[in-house]
Image 1 (cartoon, rainbow, N blue to C red):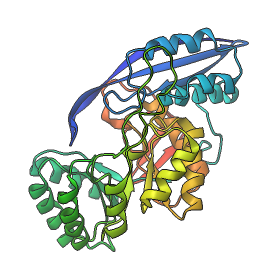
Image 2 (cartoon, rainbow, N blue to C red):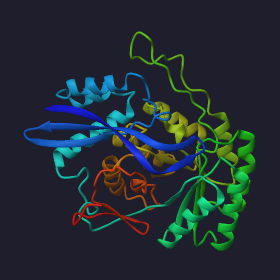
Image 3 (tube, rainbow, N blue to C red):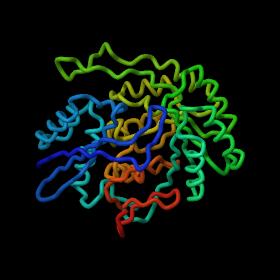
Image 4 (cartoon, helix red, strand yellow):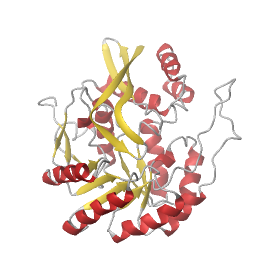
Amino acid sequence: MNAQFTQHNLIFKQASGTSRGVLTTKETYLLEISKNNKKGIGECAIFRGLSYDDVPDYEEKLTWLCENIHSDFEVLKKELLHYPSIIFGLEQALLNLQHGEDLYFPSDFTDGKDSIKINGLIWMGNADFMQSQIEEKLAKGFDCIKLKIGVDWKSEKEIIKKLREKFPKEQLELRVDANGAFSYEEATIVLQELADLGIHSIEQPIKKSQVKTKKSQETDEINSTDCCIPWNDMAKLCAETPTPIALDEELIGVIDFEEKKKLLETIKPQYIILKPALVGGFSGSDEWIVLAESLGIDWWITSALESNIGLNAICQYTYTKKNPLPQGLGTGALFTNNFETHLQLEGDQMWHKKTSYC
């Protein structure tokens, strides 16, 4: 078995704004594994400035993986424990090597017999820009829309207010994503304003409360004294909020199963958002799902601006979970230099159709 990786820089068709800044490009890595004249491809979808494994030795670890690809998967996974986006790419490549074509999780979805309902994504910008995006999504038949907020809440609130006046919550589900933009004090006010507007949920209203653990200078071991800060603020918000809260960034960097359990038992969120590239691939996502469901916490899956390679794998994985909520998987059309895919978006339904590439 052999492996190699290549870097690919995705270019946005239009600058896309979040409370963390404006995105114009997105770096990613493709991992290719070959064995017996067969190939499997996966995407190590690092998200600079957000991924837990955004570290200087990232390419060194990819090189290590390629040199040791013959090792048992569990051995590789243990070594890559603190590189969730590389685990994500490795899992994909091995699954694709097994199933061939562009398959990772063969199902009725990959056979083109069934689809996945998704939400429409509205990026930040001025009022006219956001309004035009909303009108476009509504025209395509979306009845669940997610808006990025937190740059200019006063203006954003007015947009949502006008939208809600036209479309009641029974007709249009509205989700918002703050990416940690608000302080605790601001969030307590915003959460009530969102409730008054009939908002379904808000993702990550305040910054995540745990810190990224630091690696020792001498070894790759985690310094146990640099562990998580208590999740008091987020827990208090979730306990008192009139608008359901979905944890997103809060999950990043929480690797240990018991620590994941402790986080959910402490904060008690209404929802969690799973981005496989950021939480250790499909196996990492499975752990969060098991824990969440055991605690009565609902969830959905979203992409993290992967190319169509990673997005295709996430869609196939998501379908197998049979979650009825609209999923956040509509990011494939954002880039000018994306890869061809059998994914096809029709209204608010994501399909995998083998008849033609998109």
